[in-house]
Length: 277
Ligand SMILES: Nc1ncnc2c1ncn2[C@@H]1O[C@H](COP(=O)(O)OP(=O)(O)O)[C@@H](O)[C@H]1O
Ligand SMILES: [Mg+2]
Image (cartoon, rainbow, N blue to C red; front, side):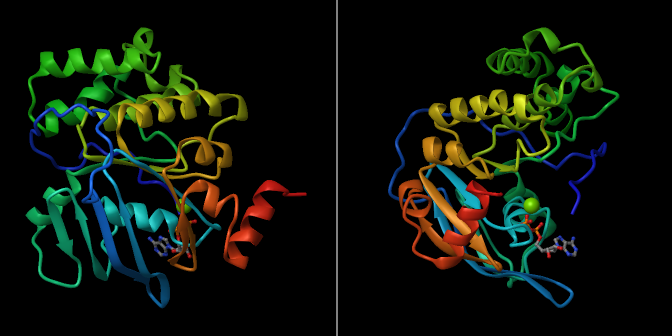
């Protein structure tokens, strides 16, 4: 499936308190709890009961074959897809998708998180800075000067201070993807979901984007990352989920799931990934 194209109506939102990520270690109660998530497209049962939790300040990597439902899981967590059943809690906001909920409930739920897609989704007719402050200023109605100051800081932190007044097409794919990440951070989400953030990039540009993800992890952001970058998973992930056929087939640390997979399907997938020819 294709990523959602950029539109002039970004996700709804209201001002949130600016809680910059800290290095607080994972606490007892998970930030995210997913239970019994199901989703069908016609007669295609794409999610068949997805369960997992994500501690605050941790990195979860989702691995799995193409078509297994990884993107649908992330889109469900951000309410871009609406699951048929199951509950998701992010922070203090939870939705029972089989129960009754309003548009306002969904909007509040969506504001808990931000998505970074495979390809950047930037507005082509807006500068880098305008792209970054769009959500905070237009949608969240935050003070423009403050939003610009914060955007400049965030752009500097990913090495793009000098690009603030350029247009997306003047940037490399890796730079555009880093702007996409900054745009997500500027919304002050509680969690950020990345859907194969490096798979549309030329190989030599992948490292810069992964370095940014590593830095965010070290800063304490709560992240769920669909990626096939195994070394990244081994170095950065607190937990790895192997998704197959719309369920979480295996879950553990990277050492457990990648280093010592218990399921034959996981072993098969990793073999193909690590030894493609
Ligand atoms: N909007 C949609 N309409 C119909 N089928 C869809 C839609 N989105 C995803 N699917 C189907 O759901 C399955 C899982 O897709 P996806 O979540 O994108 O998998 P993955 O990200 O693991 O490759 C695929 O069979 C895909 O064709
Ligand atoms: Mg996908």
